[in-house]
Length: 148
Image (cartoon, rainbow, N blue to C red; front, top):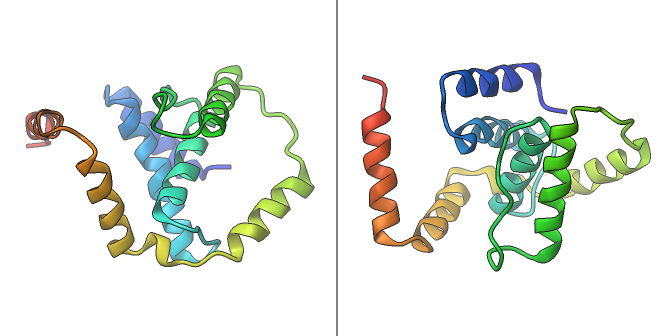
């Protein structure tokens, strides 16, 4: 369950008309903080980001599902389930056993996934997969929408 502050920040982003990926960024930031605080770990920066995005979808952020070929079929299906859960708004009873098992598994993982180096490496890899035009477009958009 995301923290109240994270939900508030995401809602504020939505009110300001920011993109769903910006709203989801709040959940990813929360997850990175959890790993740094030692609440749990993650196998990689990619996993930490995935957990944050999953939380965002379940909280109702209108994130699309990943494109075909970019991730595994299972990951796409999970993203669809998360989105559906976010749309329904119903908070079903979470299985205590499953929740505890997931947390115990994450606690066994390391904390270097949230290091600046790991995150920078992940960002660099993600950027390298994009075209120069795409990177340029988003940089121009960022410059245009930056707070003065």
